[in-house]
Image (cartoon, rainbow, N blue to C red):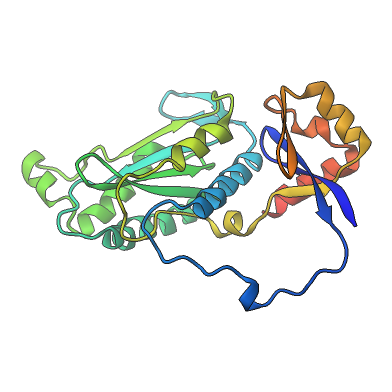
Length: 270
């Protein structure tokens, strides 16, 4: 039989019917053929990317941190980081990933960056650069020093060094997005936009915990619907579900106490 469920995003609740009962076992023949790698952002990749971003936003509450740059405390939820390459030269996109981004991410994990989503993009001049979302505050100078360390090690700073007499380009930009009203929508729109040109290699990736996790779902109760109707800003009927748009921070108000405990446990497990 079909049972009503709700599924949570950051500011959206999807209500739908899910089958609970015997299922026909799937075989390899039932699965759709995997399309060949295109170097572009496919519809399936966009869905997985948006899910990783949504889960990251949901599990990253706004908190007060000390910022040594401005010498004061401020709110922090997520950091939006851009890593640029000084001179790609004859290096391929795969080379840049292997020599720069992969080791930089390994280093970042040692500094507490357990959750991240990144996206590759081509600049107007053809050089590849990377956008990342992280929820661990690290001084931008520290991020930049290590990014430049890998650039120098693998020859990406030779032209810059000859021209400027040092190997410290302004290669990292970071800003907080805690003031953005719809963080998930803002991030998803920016990170899933079309590249315009093909990238030879990975276009995006995320920490394994975010890639493996699914959206939180629970049985829908009449109380959930009543609460949704009281607080929703928009209700939109789809072919297979109904979407309720709720204000920022109002998702917990949709759930009853038991559901809320399960939701928090779910987020802690990611």
